[in-house]
Length: 327
Image 1 (cartoon, rainbow, N blue to C red):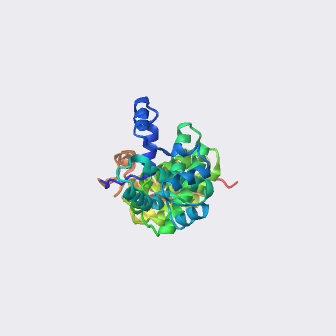
Image 2 (image 1 turned 90 degrees about the vertical axis):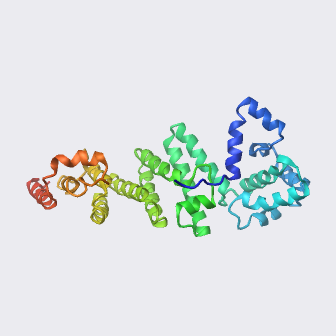
């Protein structure tokens, strides 16, 4: 069980904003005089600076820029200012939230391309909105932009694991969960656009490279996604080489056999002499098929052909190749 992650201010604000859609809760927020990010939308840059000045922070654009230089979130910038204001205004309530709200609004307006936890969170949530609207291409494009921000944050901090990222940057949707959704949506969007399949290869490869110590299930899922995407774009030899290398190292990876075989099942583009299907069948019927660690569907799928050996499979493929007339 993963440890519970701390909640960032952008996530708390997002939850409050969603709750505000309920009339009784909206009235409670108003009664508590609690500002939200949406409260800054109607204010000009000057009015946001005036709000900060009224709280004792004499800042202009240059001053805000100096505060944000090197920071990776507006929350990081706002925390010491919060402590300062609360020390001067004990019992000041939710008015302190204006500091973070103003800083984030100005960051978003003045430096929208500067990587920031809160703006990354916005991109991820915007992708989920587009997913709900079934706009697959827009969802995939939005999430690729967000993924680029994730990589920039990793580069800036030297982060080398998904858990480390989630501890340092607690998003509304954790990287731990979101990565699987990104990989899936890139595949879905790739049905109509090859560029998203190419992007999926990049995402899987980069994730495997940057986070080599992840849980086995994630590593295996990423490997399968990587190889099947190579196959889908027509690079069958690359897919075969990847699957063969991984399954040689771990022949008990049942879902790997299934993934490799599924690439060829029903494919009209694949080389009919390719050894993949028979190799998968034979090997899955040996040590992999009989292992408790192999998924039940894999054992059920391949047990009827348990008598075929690896070498026999390859011999059969060579024989099949000889029978195929040359074009």
